[in-house]
Image (cartoon, rainbow, N blue to C red; front, side, top):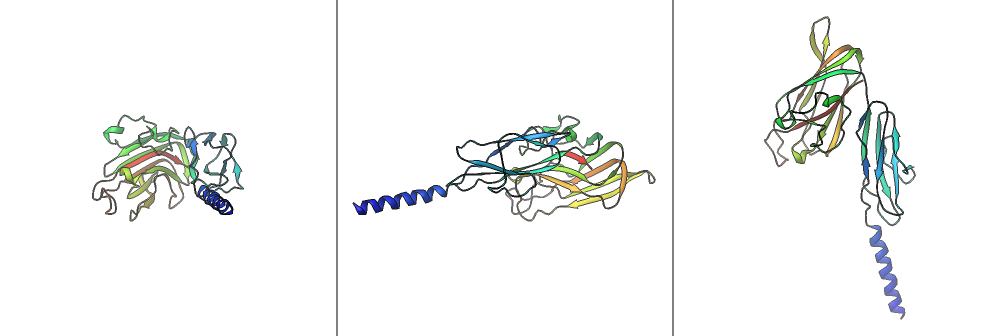
Length: 260
């Protein structure tokens, strides 16, 4: 009898240990768009009795001591949200995140090179309609390019001092969607009656990157004031050798553009 009781205790201990090794599924962030003009909000979807949803609004990794989710959370400024689920006898879930971006300077119009034929019927204001920030490249919020050069003209409603240009790019290398080789930014100089360089960013593709909405900020190399900006993006012309599509032309996907 004692031996049977010992075996039962051993079984319960092993069962309890195995239960603690199970990881909770990641929660789902629900929101209309990652971009907004005045205010927005997000919800968290997760159903498991006893589990606690914890989140942060400063980009830090959530812990069991952080904010407890109970209702939709309002957002009124640029915010990096991270959410994680905790539960007794379970490993915490993976962290899910989203960055919400508020409008910057008023944009009158954005003109862009013709995208791939599949995206040619996109709305004229697709790059500044505050609709996007999702990972699905077929969502209708992205412009897709498989060309060598992409030109984008950003016309502001008035002359402004420009501190930052933000571009939302998609990185989904399994779908052959890469960050560009380079982004060049120009501004219209009234004295020279021409567009002159304002800044640039060069990308390397030596190792695989995560699937994500990649918000790139380009800070002008000098103080500028203008109402006209020109962006030149150079898509990846040759996928690197570590990728299954090596040697082929990469895709470039662009969402919103903001100016601050």
